[in-house]
Image: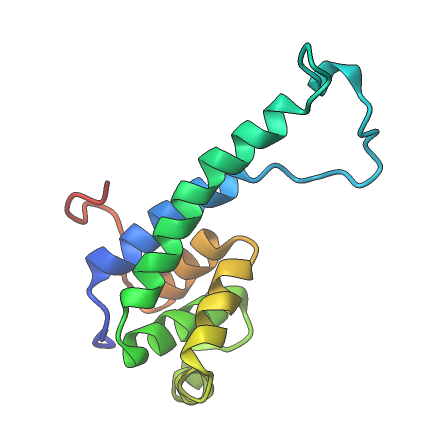
Length: 141
């Protein structure tokens, strides 16, 4: 079994926060009419979108903070795991994935992870590819 550099509990916390973050960001429909009366409060403001932004920033900031706190090699490993989960790399190409991730500037790596659709699922799939799972992992809330 591959030895993780990053504690499994930390990876699972990233997965939980990423899933919360994904759940909060509604897919914005560019064709939606901004003047839709249902979204407006008495003053005609879009109250709901402001609320969503406020809810979202807490989890998003926490997720970014967890990623920022990782050592560079752990961040690279997390990115490589996400790539394996995404199908960019196969398990047999783990060394290549790690090499590319290690060549990625840490700030760019954090941005790529934050911007990755379905980050939680990709990380779970990446872990599963190496027989790791978050099932029963410590307190992750």
